[in-house]
Image (cartoon, rainbow, N blue to C red):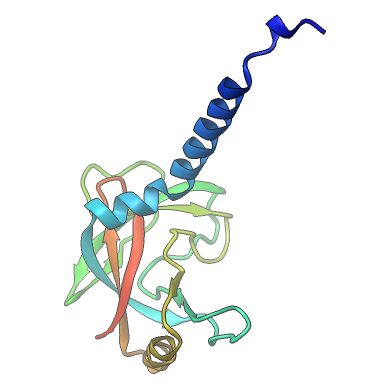
Length: 160
């Protein structure tokens, strides 16, 4: 085999590292953008399931003030947000990006809840149990950071 046709080993290693970095940025970029450049909004939150000791200390969240995707074509959708007292709520589902924030960029399977990347929050075990109790009692709000592109991240869950 002619060695001149193959790139040098350092070039292959560098290319592999660059590819991994690009994939990593693509995977965490939207959430990182929301955390670093986003504005805080509070949405009413409820529980999905109780804490499972085998999966770690986290809380699964649902948002009663966001619309469900029932009857929508699968794909990317946008949920404009409007104030509702001290909290915010979704006003519907749009296929076109809204002209101005705040809005959430979500995915839909065509049924059930939207996937906006804000469905879980990892916490220390003692705090997770307290937050779960507040969620069950319908006394909690999720604090989200949302950037100008609708990317969102859950920052914390607080009492309403």
